[in-house]
Image 1 (cartoon, helix red, strand yellow):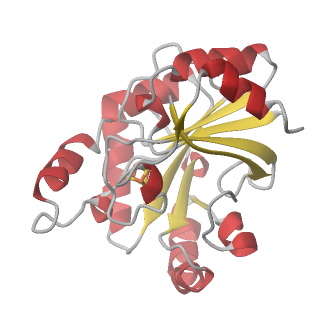
Image 2: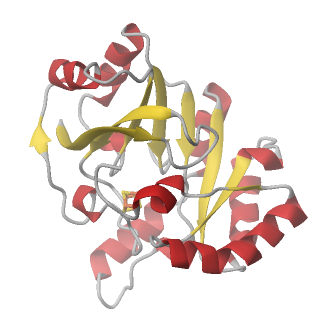
Length: 230
Ligand code: SF4
């Protein structure tokens, strides 16, 4: 499968924030978010072809027990199920970071980090006509989210750009149709600089306090900035 990068760092987002982890970033995505922070794995996919055995061997060079399968969209990568099964055999804890548009089937996974995309992600129709339409049609898949939520430990992570996004989040959660405790819903400020994150923090914190959602920081931006391999 096409791999954009494999590196060792601290998990920067979500319930496992701060956990030393190996990141396996597959290249290729079925969506095109206008604020995508890994365009080299979506808009302009780069990387090198690697076999499951080669990836597993690279992962084992690092001491971490935690492995993050991320992207791009890891669930579109050919061989992702075989890779997850192999990592499980090696005793790894597997987080899958996905936009939850593709059914998990029976993939090995210890934490499903689900990040359904909001309207704020849709690229401008005038600039990206075909992708805009495809993205808009695909981004909300409540049945798929439900399948992940029912099968795996999970967190639901939303990138929030403005206050109005909260109504859409509530609608998405309601469409999933199963009870999701508010503390399983993580709101992350949109932004790839520490200044942008800080500017959005006060309003987002107030929203979290009002609804019982969890505020989700981006530790890797705080520590390293928006750099590849971190
Ligand atoms: S789903 Fe993720 S990788 Fe794909 S375009 Fe959106 S932010 Fe980028």
